Length: 234
Image (cartoon, rainbow, N blue to C red; front, side, top):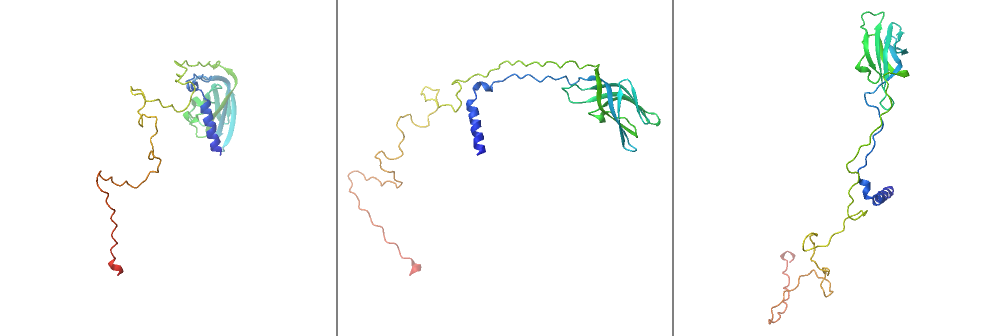
């Protein structure tokens, strides 16, 4: 029942739809920042894991300042994040060094929040991850969202076919001997082809008897001979 109603709704929609609805329409793209746009912030939120006791500490370090967790020193040089119209991500330019373990090499570079495996701090004791950037907006500034431009199409309207808004199968055209019309499937005649004899009698499936030549006497019908006895029944 539901399928029947759905088909009826679709049929009504296509019947009511004008021919011009199938024409190409220019669509304005959404307003978005370019993919390489970053917005500067004044604070960096960093999470540190101590692998010895699985203790996790979250530090909020201002840009240009230094934070500390146990023997790890964290100096933040820059912190940027993606603007609102792009996928969320943050990047921190940081200097990391262990003040106790002198065999551990210091780290200078960028850490990404969405892709932490691209650049990591190679310490056997600490695991450092970027959470986000916060604070006020500073340079580099993302600026206002660029205004999208609507594309211009060469032809916005589809050509309207002859017959207006009529939707349905095309009507057959009459045959013309001079050409241009469809090939007829029956002789060109206004009278229908009879399916029974013209005298109105029902059509017989028995073949007609051969017609005797003119002037010849009609021959009497010979009776059929009796069947021969079956030797097995005697």
